Amino acid sequence: MAEAKDTAVKFVAAFNAHDERALLALHAANIKFEAPGGVHVNTSAEATAYAMRWLKGFPTGKMTVRNEIESGPWIIQEITMEGVHSGPFQTPTGIVSPTGKKVVGKGVQILRVENGQITEARLYFDQLEMLSQLGLLPVPATV
Image (cartoon, rainbow, N blue to C red; front, side):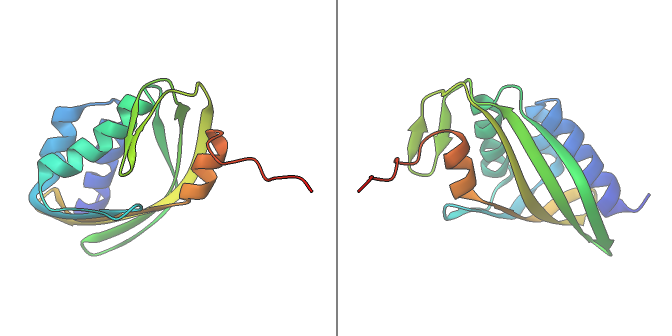
């Protein structure tokens, strides 16, 4: 198994196990991490904290890899994230109180791996779809 693939498998397993220590070990000290909502972090602690915010908001949260492409140090994964929003969820705009709603979201993560650690990560997902599933979008006015 190539290094990028092996590290990505370990990352998904650590995420699904909600293993903060393993996630921290997989993030390089000077990781370049980007996610929707203007998230840009540059340390392993910040990247791990981002993942843990999701797992605290969605304690049953799991990631499933649907498809992936590997090229050298890069791996691109089409993922599905699902879980029940039963904990406080810290977002870039504040904390969202638990809604009790199940969310199933699709996204893509692009990872660059060096020496068994993720040095770059870009996460893409549909924020509007997530807000809709949580019931947080305003109901359109009727005429």
